[in-house]
Length: 580
Ligand code: ME8
Image 1 (cartoon, helix red, strand yellow):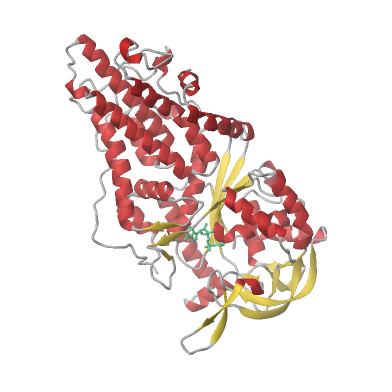
Image 2 (tube, rainbow, N blue to C red):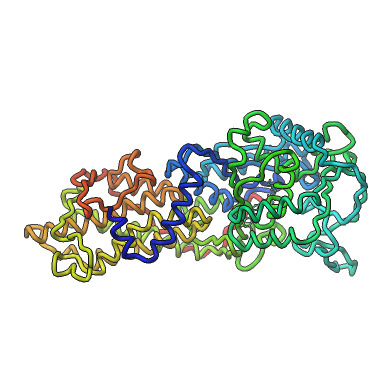
């Protein structure tokens, strides 16, 4: 195949090929997979950080569907119990159920609007979830993982957890009073003493270490894997997993002891099982689960959750994908700073695909990323409107392609060569055209490998680079200067357009998980039928290898409109969350 021939001459194709084989071997056809986002606290409306988590999971989910890798589900939802919600409802002068219903609906709406392809939306106040949590609790108890103990320590309501002295600092308020606060979040902590159920977390230090050592890809990207290994090297105290009901009524009661409420984190984590029908049908899916989480909740997912699962007789999830945070003009997003960015307003202003593209293209899981409006306009205009849209426009313009068809490729103009330094003497394509075609041919594998490693931004970077190269190819040969009436020129003109459309077809196919509407528009314009849009059956330039190209001679799609309208630069500095 072209791919084989070309990858032999391309050193950078080595890595994706290996990674892709690994991807195929661990995720073979028919294999089920649950992808998940965290479930979000129903104490405030969604912001772009929440949307980012959902987009990452959505892109993985859509990409998997296009690879025909097997049935997959994408779960998301809202986390509705706990002191935090109880207090937020009181502050808003409403009841917890009313607050949760309202906020949960906003998350549902935001994700639907952003074309998140979720298959399950779970609310922890639903009976199916409460039943799953009770069953999970009973499993922990039956297996001897729980005991009753008196717990005292500094409790942080905002983080819903006890914090050790090492994670605290002091803050002096305007009145000169000193308060103990969490060093990480800055939220105040209170000394709390109560009788709780304790989970024997300390007993899982060795099993957790072994699990990670045996599964080096369990937590990605690598720095987060190392961080978890580091935590597991330190003391791992037992965990308090219930609260006195007198202090916390808004939660699930401990099944055998109504004076206690189940700790909100145990409650929340079980959502990944309740969406799978635990305790009845989860076995058909679990442990094939990939959790997308923010770095703030890494310990809960990479230490507590696997330990709880092992204690309940289940396996840890297969993979945990961790991402960092969006800041706004260098500051943490927070309601008190009033700089929370509203996803509804962003989708409206930048379009759904424009904003999806921006977040996934600019978000780097390993490090925090800064958001500002001018950057969105710049990235989206240059890459979606100018580079990709411009390329489609130029290569399908009536002046260039009057028959409005997918033109034919000519082997005479672009002959198959072993050493492309000789190319120019044989046909009309130059050595750099062969090099460019090599990079497009290796793109699908490269993109698959980046998705597999949770580096979607790198996949998009590679695609953007190839789009630029295709524009360069088109520009270099100035097809508008060729004479369609001259038979030799016509062959070459058609070949230039054919190669360009083949490239666009590859980009459209690979971009489907990220910009589904734009990709659909692009592929429809290229007359690519829905069943021809799978990544698994993507071929590039088959005519180069003497194979037939099903698109050759096809009439192009009727929608000749602009692929992506340029966004207007705005004088308004920031989209603020009007809902707050
Ligand atoms: O922690 N940038 O819910 P939560 C990027 N209910 N992502 C961000 C972000 C930012 N600035 N801020 C938040 C909870 N996120 C629990 C989870 S799961 C069983 C229970 C995203 O509403 C990121 O994914 O505080 C983070 O982990 C999550 O929202 C926290 O959402």
